[in-house]
Length: 93
Image 1 (cartoon, rainbow, N blue to C red):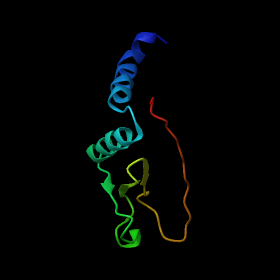
Image 2: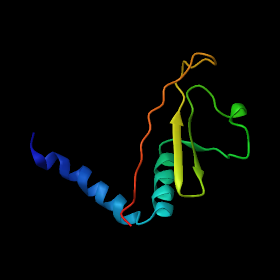
Image 3: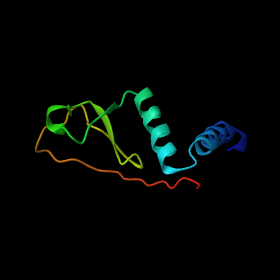
Image 4: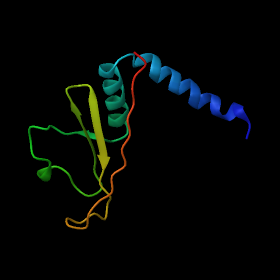
């Protein structure tokens, strides 16, 4: 594969890292990107059971330094279980 094809991705990653010098900025920048892709912010103060629906995309933050995002499959039915994929990032502070 030609390395030039990866330059746009690397440039976007550099923009994100430059704009995210600490956890607060990283969470805010990630939340903005999620919202621009159809994710809805949840409040930990309210039960998710009335809000989360099959086919929905959601996120919430913890102390503005951690972000949890998830999507519910369109065919999800309560009691069928679910799968979780996790990730972690540390901003370059």
